[in-house]
Image (cartoon, rainbow, N blue to C red; front, side, top):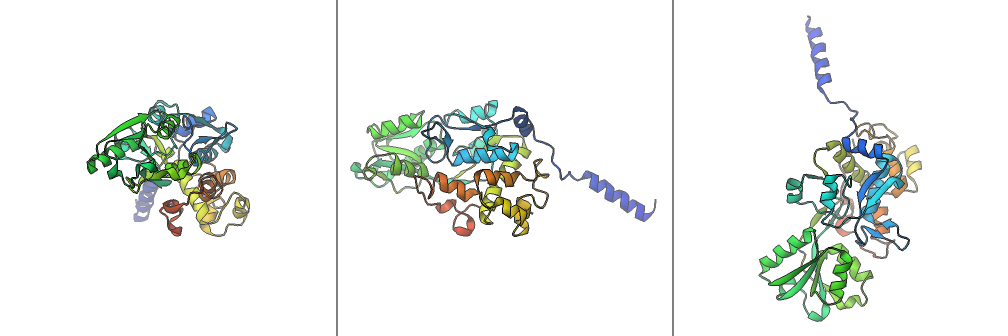
Length: 344
């Protein structure tokens, strides 16, 4: 064998050892395609701005739109999503049993969930911390002033642990009361059975602004108990499905960053403004085959639900009843912390 022949044989062996650019279909995606629907988490009630039911009995919210985005990426049709109502405590058992394929439901990424529950998490798509809302007539502004009070919280959330740990650190004696349903918690607080309502800061702000009469009678305390990354949760062991979820979120952020919207996506696909947009919209091949999907999945997804800014605005921002500023949940280029990996 000549030196040149040995080189060619070695090169061929290396090439055969490399993974194929075309991914095999993930087990989770195969199940979803065979079923013809994506089973995505809902809520047993309304978690305003994220997972709620409107007056026509239709699901809406930021998390619901991400479920629809994922469904479009996988099945080409946002209408093929099935939203499964779940309490906070039910969501992880439902995922493990296969009652849902993915949890997209204001779910915090924690070490315990990551290492003890057999879960994997996506890129964070939202950041929000735990806070406390109290009756203004108590005359308090800080959690340290809650001594002897009753704090109500929704069962099965990270909020329970965060509040308990925080008040213990402050040395504040208190009574914690948990409720299975958000509606029961709101009713208890408004009936003065609780001195304080512990919850996720963005949700408390939405609740105070739109769902409570005389919002000035309620105050969100100064304490910021946590800054929690919110991510989609999946079962451990299907890395290809995790990749798809990550790039679904990344594609929505990239679309916003590059000005690709629901209205102009077809035009941008026909005449991409730069190489990243060409890759994002499948005009330059790669975004599909590397995930085992169609080359046009991101284009179809944006046409169905818009980019991340459009999703935020209609559910939480300027086009919603809540008018919440994006703050940390803006793109890195606009003073926030959200960013997408490089689409090369």
